[in-house]
Image (cartoon, rainbow, N blue to C red; front, side, top):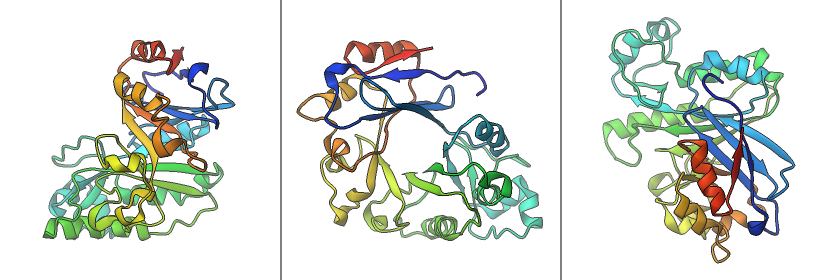
Length: 279
């Protein structure tokens, strides 16, 4: 991965739990997330390619063993901007009536731009050369959406996400999708885009730390996904909290810590018996 290297995480024995604990360290600066399986004695370490929206890089990443990715479908409402940015979409007959979902964390559309789109992603995943890599997990962090807004923009955004969700992919690979960002299962979208589950952040839907209430969509929040915050993760790891429902039997998704600023920060987390990072 350009500008980065793999690092390993090891949990301190003082906070081992009755079941194997999984930890994701999402390192956006390096474009990585590191997963730990098994508290104190990891049986395997894997990684997520974090916010890598350039599909041109995926083939080499897959060849190197990557099987988990995160993309950022960013809503662009104006069909004319979409058409100007990607005139080939018009040529290919892609319907831009409702705008487009381009892959990019921070998008600036001006003239012709090389952003990939969700249509590109679906076509890419349907190619024969991708099928040989087997199971893939892709988190979709939707941005600039208009969920439950009851506006024309909201209707257009919902249509684009619905179409993306409903498009079947002709492949022998198994693809697991995870919702994030504006498409989380809450409010009017509690039951939308089933059976895809979602990430959960401590500052949102706080009751979902403990509850799987289906009436609120909390049963679909299955991936603990908090930012780098020593105090917060120390609290989550405390015996009285023990990661809430996420440490319960059957909740086997990796814990995810995103945007760790530097290895030194994880050394600080180690002081709290949380993790050690080694080059």
